[in-house]
Figure: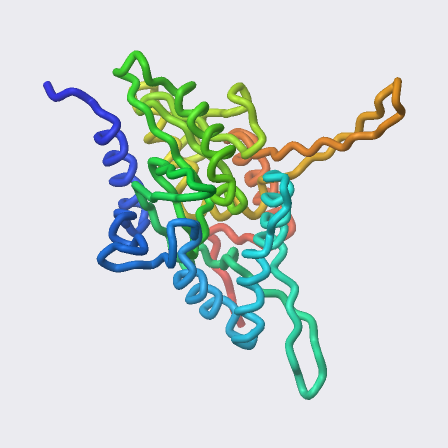
Length: 308
């Protein structure tokens, strides 16, 4: 019987994502010195050509110069606080990037969208492994990164449950190291997945280990069998194109709380990024669907419809 290794777990992850319609890329091939370079340097964390192509495809009414300016805008995000950067980008991602365009000789406001939220399959989905990033002379290589339209939205760190020195806790600690050493990658992060091949949990950029949660259903109808690994269930249930796009758009919030120091009177505001758990995600969507059906916006498939 062959020994399970991290490479096998990585290959299993990539295979499942490939079956969900992700394009697989071995990152060294698109590195600056690779066979088909898609990055100008190892400091660059976005696949800009893919992003440019997606923006042109999604924003057909926006002039090219405004599209270019939108890309520059998200590249200029540079607060010293990682979570601040991430919140700014998330707002651009989910609300569009404000731009100005000339219409009949007048300036008009509009928005550039980085993702086609209405049609998930109109986006470019990539799963890449061995994606080397160099920042401040630090060289790191996360296990797997999921790109949507060239944006690194999901980082996956995988360990081997058969190795007593490598656990899902180790995967979390590795992510914490990445956040400190290559923070530019996480400016654009939607959420993080950690796994040891059996256990698998997802969490937000600000979440502690106990806030990382398993995704327990592949279809939202029933919890997965215990005979199926949590990693497989999470990939099929959470990372399929429709659910991932929906999660990014509607199920991530930045919650702020205020605290006043009783001695100094100084007020501090703390921000926490929250990602919906699987049961919250499915419950909200069922409630919305039920409301729309009651209002007549959803017609059951078996109900004949007279269009005239």
